[in-house]
Amino acid sequence: METMRRDLKTFKKNLKFSDLTESTLAEFVAYFRDVKTLRTPRKKKGDREEYDHDDITGLKNSSIEKKLRFLRWFLNWATEKGYNTNMAYKSFKPTLKTTQKKVIYLTKEEMGRIRNLRLSEAQAYLDPIRDVFLFCCFTGLRHSDANNLRKSDIKGDHIEVTTVKTADSISIELNDVTKAILEKYKDSPFNDNKALPNYTNQAMNRDVKELCRLAGINEEIRITTYKGNVRTDEIHPKWELVGTHTGRRTFIVTTLSLGIPPNVVMKWTGHSDYSSMKPYIDIVDDIKATSMTKFNGLI
Image 1: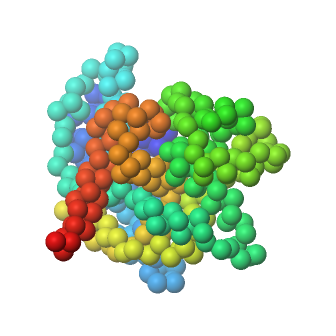
Image 2: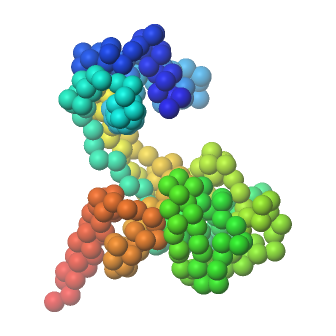
């Protein structure tokens, strides 16, 4: 909410609900695309502290869509409360060329590489990071929920969690991997009786990338984005794209690949909308189609 308030104020001072006509909303989109200054530049020019104009100015189309979705939510709320009577936003549908966001997850072989990675003494700080990350990969918990897990939430063969993001109450059965991780830390005196080591999302994102880099998770992945009508294709090693949420995505793809029904997976993850599972189901369908080719040549 604060970010949107700041964006609206920077775009045009003293903006009122009645000012949000379709033409003004179109100007707001243009502001995001061409004017807004990024806090974090998109890329460095080699090792020099030097950036091009495009690196520090303007959002990509996918980011603009997120901004507009939040603005629509806010305006719907304001309309329901009687603060807004201007309905122009309801018919405002700008054309923003985007691609479906690529789901980054780890394969069984890649998870095995992380589990079996031998860390040097200097790299020992990554060991608890690995445990928390693998716990997310094998439970589907978000990083925030793994951080919030308390020893009192462990109920024998399962854990009971009220999620931080959505306040859903979920129960997740434990498996050999997650039992071993919890056992490892059962006597550790963490603050607030926490069950696992705690890390900020920023620190976890940084160190999980390093862990995956050391594990040789180097598959090249092309990411396509649009800024206006300009298409950009960038090739990244997979470890650069891994983050805390990769654990949850890995869990969903793995469980569906094992043939566990989507409705069961949704009970574990707290998803209430079947459509949110569709990208993962599409991935599993592709995996199955690729696996079928292994029968070629047997006869």
